[in-house]
Image (cartoon, each protein chain N blue to C red):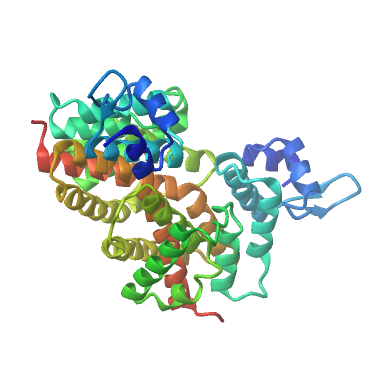
Length: 214
Length: 214
């Protein structure tokens, strides 16, 4: 398809597509002559992903380029490629390592992974931004003076593991390796807000079931 | 305890406590003489909650006042009080009702609640900000051109219902009615980021288990 059709089918203006081409977010089309290039379904799919990150996820252009670099790097094994792509998305900043609450939370959260038997996650605690997010949130609760046992997280984590199994099952229904990684990015950008909404809806449902309106 | 001790034990400066008192976020202490007031553990607990919302959740002061108004309103039954307090937190704005993607997503999400048998949630779709969030996220996926069956959400929702059961069980371990509502607010502000971190960690664990590093 030509640029005009790519624009129409993706809902992205030709000016924006040209900008993405210049910025290297989108691979150049097949040049037919000096002024015309031909694009295919892969361009269309990639454009949707770029729009999801930029327009919905508010991911900066430089970060999108980095994420897509990992999506396209087929020299990496799948786990690393998946991790690198998701980890390249905006994450919570590194907390102050000297902060006593952060140190305490880190030890407590390592204990939770140990209780769960998540041996792979345990080996990634120093580099995983997901582990960092968990530590930052746990430290915030302690700093506010809430005294809670880290073990309360264990049943929550087991349910989130079942959620992750659904994620992977869904990812595996896609054929190409690049599409699989793209689904993981979309999950992080678009599906997590849906999961949070389902969580709150479930609370409303459960509260009404338990306590009614009286 | 006096103001100085309340400040020390809560980690909130006396100037900030005085500001919260003026703004009506914190109930006045028991006046001992014209210049001194006495505060108790309830003031301390309330201060922690206010800090959680303002400092960690970045909730505006006017919103905090509204949330606390619902927490303290013991004329309401528990479900309504819980809902009102959580719903008063910042939420996604109302989407454009004329937008075809929003209309389609609303019908699709109502179908998901039907499949789940969440009859209470079904009766609240016009007012629940959680349902609105779900519709907005679902509409975003469609608008980006992703064609997906709403039914894929059903197993996710069932797991989130189990998460909500854990939430309510934990809430019920607290004695007073006001504390129960406070726990629900804390959950929305502080625990949801932890749940999201656990979800991503579980994905990392599951990906490594399934695909290793090769």
